[in-house]
Structures are given as C-alpha cells and as structure tokens.
Length: 178
Image 1 (cartoon, rainbow, N blue to C red):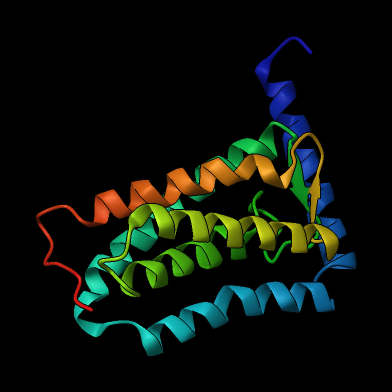
Image 2 (image 1 turned 90 degrees about the horizontal axis):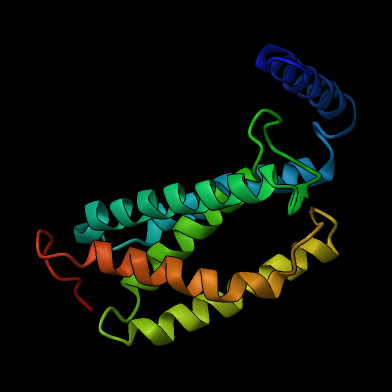
C-alpha cells in the first residue's frame, strides 16, 4: 500500500461489508430492538421527569457528555480495544445507546438528584453503575472486549462525571435546586 487512497478504499470496502452484514444479520433482531429502545426510552423518561427549570443546564451537561463519550468510544473502537456486535446504525462505529443516551441521561439524572451531594460520591456511584452495565453488555454479547477490561473504565467514568459536573456548575448558570 503506497498511497492513502488505497487505504481509504479498504476502509470504504470494510464499511460496505459491515453494512451488508448489518442488513442481513442485525437489523430487526431482538438485539437491534433493544438498542433502539435503549436509544429512545431513557430520553422519554428524562423528558417526563427532568427539572423543567434546569432543562438548559442539563441538556448542556448531556451534550458535553455525548462529546466526551463518543470521542473516547471512537478512539477505543478504532484502536481495536473493543467492538459492538449489535449496532443500531451500522455507519456509526460506536454503540449509539451508550454515547447518545445512556451516559448523558444518567449523568443528567445524577446532576439533578441531590444537587448538593458530594460530586465525588456521585462520580463513584456513577462509575460503579457504568462498569456494571458494561459487564452486563459483555455478558449479553452486545459488546466484545478485545484488549480492554471493564474495570479499566472505572477511573475514566469518574473523570467524565467530574468534568461534566464542573462544566455545568460554572457561574453563568443558576444553581440547581433540590
């Protein structure tokens, strides 16, 4: 392989093969439907139970979470540390329910529940729950660890929560109310 075009052609071919596989083997399976549900249902629950006066702040927290988790998930997927077997959308290399729903909605709920509780305690609980769900998804065969173990994620989840908490509590927002 002497030029970049040949490498991109290989990537395009791999995506075409993945898309064909997805159409024939993943689309409309029970695993795919679980992914669709996990993408939509948490947002619907959040819309119903969010603190209306904190919507903008919480959506900002969710957006920051999506950016961070998608970026880290993309790096891990590209480096071959893990992969997802039952994607909702085949052209997104990460698992859409994780990055676009489960992490941001979870963090938004954590931020609005007991807003004056210790952010370190909340980050620790968030991390334990996230690693637990990661292990569940490994067990359900949705997610395959290649050169990664769920426990490696534990400190990363703590840092993600603390970053989002710090960003969302900047002075240009009103304080969260209990």
